[in-house]
Length: 198
Image (cartoon, rainbow, N blue to C red; front, top):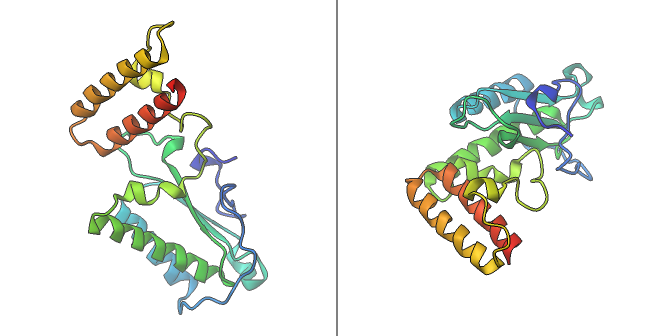
């Protein structure tokens, strides 16, 4: 299982475990050369402010005889200087017969997701949530609510413990001052706490 960009190779293709391979492939409708598709994709990554990525595919010299799948692994831009495994994302495509068409499809997907952010319905982070490289750990969506809200006294009935956690959640959410990353973390934590304490 890939948990870091350092584990991803350009060649051979590193396909994400979370995405099944296409059952069948079809001709693409893109009129694009490999070099242009890759340059457009890299330009789109710059527009996203992605600093580290790996474009994984079969060696180019194999052409259509090889695997045409492409996987773009990247760290979402974040406020922390060192990316974590939670920041690792992957967009992968093998729907088309030609590698350059799958490259183009990923580039257009990035462009469309950026448009989603521009139009305001979702942020880029929300739009690519489904593109996470790893499934969330079972149980708490990767968030330990006890660390977020602090330990609750042992022996309290669950209703009382949940009331304490809810009060801490409201206070922290008010202090978050519309920081979307922090609000998302708090929301995941309160959902996990409510599941555990019901």
